Structure formats: C-alpha cells, structure tokens
Length: 100
Image (cartoon, rainbow, N blue to C red; front, top):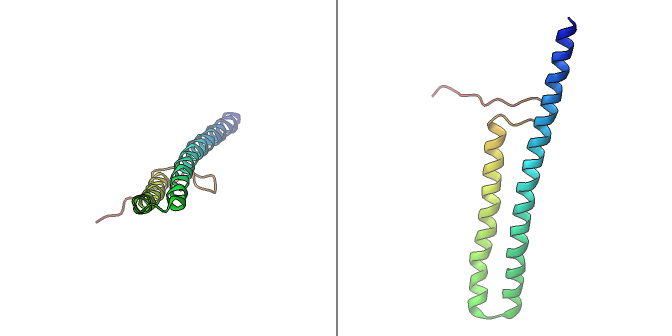
C-alpha cells in the first residue's frame, strides 16, 4: 500500500513538470508572435504616415502577414491540444481516432 502512495506522488510531480513545460513552450511561442506582430504593426504605421502609394500598397501584404501568423499560431495550438498536451483540468489529453 505504501508503495502505491509514493508512486502516486511521483506521478503527480511528473504531471506538474509536464504542465510547466507545456506552459513555458506556449509562452515563448506567444511572445515570439507578439514580437513579430509588433514589428509588422510599426511598419504598417510608418507606411500609413508616409502616404507614399508604394508604402500604402505594401500595407496590404503586411496585413496578410499578420493574419497568416495568427492563423498559423491557432493551427499549431489546436494540433498540440489534440496531440496529448495537458488539458485545463490537469488531466492528460488523448487523441481519439475515430473509424472512417
């Protein structure tokens, strides 16, 4: 019986460590996206203030880059959620394969 208690505690510690690792990885990804977006927004603002036609048309591309980086971040986070990352209730998620 005593061995069961200790193995449960050890498992909980491993579980907590996994949650921290997933959080840290996600935080770094979010920070990188925010940094990239900040640079894009600054360039968009400079282009807008310049009122130069070429710069204004460049903003269309920059807006597309912003949209694309956001979409990629959402796809990545969705894939990680389905691949067994920790759920908000602290339990490990499991990807369920449905028959076709």
